[in-house]
Amino acid sequence: MAKNSRFEKIYSQGTMTVTEIWVDKVTGVNYVFHQNGYAGGMTPLLGRDGQPVISPVVNPYNE
Image (cartoon, rainbow, N blue to C red; front, side):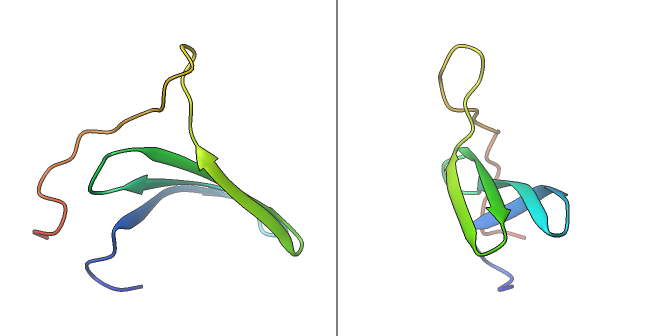
């Protein structure tokens, strides 16, 4: 993966059925990706209040 990619995988579970959490390093929005076989999808991760989970963003491309 590129050094300055916009998204960072912060969690991964499974091999055939995969669930991952990705963070957009520019906006801080967390996304859930789920894959089962050849099918998969991604959606924003929502908290109990129904709002997107947002992580703090610190200098996203200054690594």
